[in-house]
Length: 220
Image (cartoon, rainbow, N blue to C red; front, side):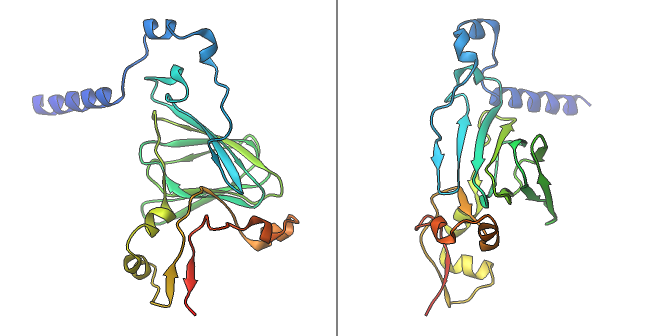
């Protein structure tokens, strides 16, 4: 019993130690009143199909020690935020404006969980599970994601996979030597299907990734 209590105490201390400095009255009183609200700088990640604006203690001092962070997003019509994970946090999404925002994640047993959201709805993405957002509407989608960690961390699945040796990637995907891998992706946001773009009246060519996306190319 004593051993169990000791282990619980050690685990609790470890969690508290990793959480960083806890806000107290002195810390909070030293922050100017205006700094308790945040006016973000221009978007810190711009792509053809969307952008994001991050809010962590690095950008917003008042968050220091509170163990949470937030990012706001805009997805253009037919755009997808690439599959990714947050290795440090659970994520809570709130749809500010959305006509048809598809969201989904894959559970540990391989089950795909998918839903379609509209304005005012919320969705949750468990820590460490692969998930995505896709704007299947012809209007912009805006949403906010709050994380239960000072830095939720993000790993984009496709570039992480394609950073591995090509023979490992092709074997894992069940491909053969007729496929090669081209340029590495440099954005989190991509246009998606021609069906959606056509439905929304967009020229598919206007949404060219222009080298930002890595592709599997059939050798000629």
